[in-house]
Length: 480
Length: 129
Image (cartoon, each protein chain N blue to C red):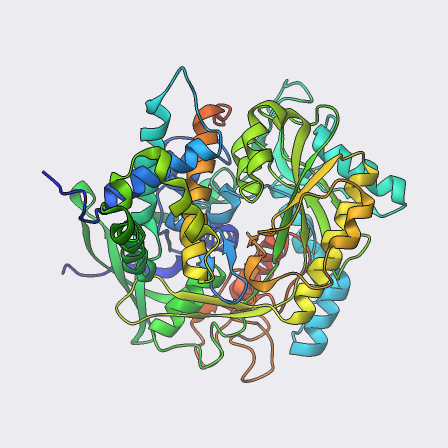
C-alpha cells in the first residue's frame, strides 16, 4: 500500500455535523480532508423522494431496520451531504427544556438556550432558513385546519429552502443542503473531499490517528485507503459513528448502547376533495399541542409513498390510481424506546436493535387516536393507520376500536431521526464525549453528529446537530 | 434448462413480484410488462443492498417460500400458474411466524412503491448543483 494521505484534520462523514465542522476548520486555515462513504453530486441530480433517490443516496437502498419486537424502519443518507440531501428540510432549534434536561441529567456544560443562540442564528443565516413565501401545500393546511378546529397548537415550520431570484412564490425552491452550502464553502477554503471511501478503523499513530478503510479505485474496484491525521472528527451519524468506534476498540462500553430515535406511526387519510397533486411541495405544518409526549405532521404524499402506507388495506390500494388526489399521509411521532448499535464480526453492516416498552406502545396508541381525531375534524372520510390487521377508521365513533396499546408485532413504524448513541456530557460511564464532543480519554478524537444529542429532542434534529457542531468546532479552534 | 421442482431465487422474486403488483392494482395496459420487469429488477437489486447480515437469511427464506408448494402442487411456487399463487402468498402473509409475514411485507412494500413510482413518475430533479 502506498504511503497514507496526510492531513492536519480528518472529518469522517459529510452530513450536517461533518460539513459544518469541515467548513469552519478549512475557513480557519486548517488542512482538512473530508471523507464520505457515498458518492458525490457529480452523479447528477435525481428526483427528490423517488425510488431513484433511494437507490442512489440512501444507505442500503433504504432497507435499514432496527430489529426488535416492534421493528422500526429507518433511513440514513449515504452521499455527499448525508441526511441533509434526503430529509424534508424542516428546521427547529432545540427546545429550551430539552437543553435544560441535558445539562441537568448529563452534566453538559454551556448548553443553555443563550449559549446556543449565536450558533442557531449563524446556521439559520447560512441555510436561508425561512417560512414559505407562498401558500403551504393543501395537505399541510388540512393538518393546520384540523388543529385549529380543535383549538390545538399548530405551527408552520421553517425550512432551509431558497427561491431562485425572480421565481414565483409557489415555485419549487432549492434545498439548501450541505452539498449546496457548507461543502462548497469548505472546498473553496482548501478542504479536500474524498468520496466513495469507507472507513473501517481508527488507531492511534504517534500523537494522531491512522484512519484506514477502502476507497473506489479504477473502475470502481475497492482499494485500501489510509489517512494519517493529527485530529479526527467523526460525523458518520448515530449508527455508523458508534459502529466505527466499537470496531476500533474505542469509546468504552457505552458506545452505541444508548441509541434513541423518534418512532413514527403513519396514517393515510382520504378527504372528500383534492388535497394532493404531482409535484406537491413538502408539507410544513406540525402540531405541538401534546409535545413533548408526541407531535404530528404531514409526510411526503406522492403516489408511491401513499401506496406504501396502504399496503395493509388492499381495497384502498387498488382504488389509489383514482383516489390519490384526495389522499395524504400524516404521522404521529414519539420519542420513546431505547436501542443499540453492535458491529457483527465478519459483516460490514452493524446490527441495530430497538425496544419499545408497553408505555411507548400505549403512548403511540394515544397519539394515533388524537391524530385521527384531528384528521376527522379536518374533514377526512377514511383513515388507514399503518397497523397490520386493523380496520379502516370511518369516523370518530371508530376511535373507540383503537386499543389502549398498539400490537407490538403488527405496528409498522419508521423514522429518519436517530441520535444519542454516543452522548456528550460529564457523567462518566454514560457519556462517550465531554460537553464539547471530545471523546473521553482521547484528546484528538471528536464526534460531530447526532450521536452527541443526549436524548430525543422531540423536533427535527438537524438544526440541533448543526448548532452543536458549530459550537464545538469553534471551541476547538479557540483552544488550539 | 431448469426444472420446475427446483427452487430458484430470481424466478421466485419475479413470480412473487408479478403476483403482488397484480394484487395491488399496479397494472398499466400501455406499458404492460415493462413496469413489472422494471420492478423485478429493482427488487432483485434491493436484495443485494440489504444489510449484509440479512442477505443470506433472506435468500434462504426466498428459496423456502418457493419450495413450500412442492409437496402439495408438485412444482415450486415460481412454476405455478399465476392464478394459483395467491393462496400461497396469503398463507405466508398471515403466518404465525413473524419471519414469514416480514418476507411478504418486504416484497410487497418494494413492489408497490416501485410500481407506483413507475406509474406516477416523480417531478424532475432540482437543477444541477
